[in-house]
Length: 91
Image (cartoon, rainbow, N blue to C red):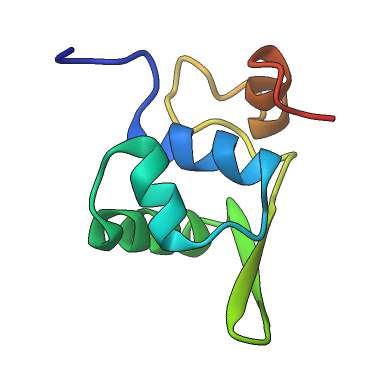
């Protein structure tokens, strides 16, 4: 498969919505990208205000900024939370 409907950034957000305590190695495995790529994506999302992280022992826990608008100009009227709800991953 050469393309998907979501970017890797979108996949990271969706997976974090299910499991905010997931390890980078597990994210890497689930998405099919390197741990370095996952780390870069987490930094992008953090620096852009889409998530915060908190250190809990030896692990990080991530909190998604659910009310943050989507980045593309054609989707800016929608939030991260809406994307997660559409994909059925929010409890």
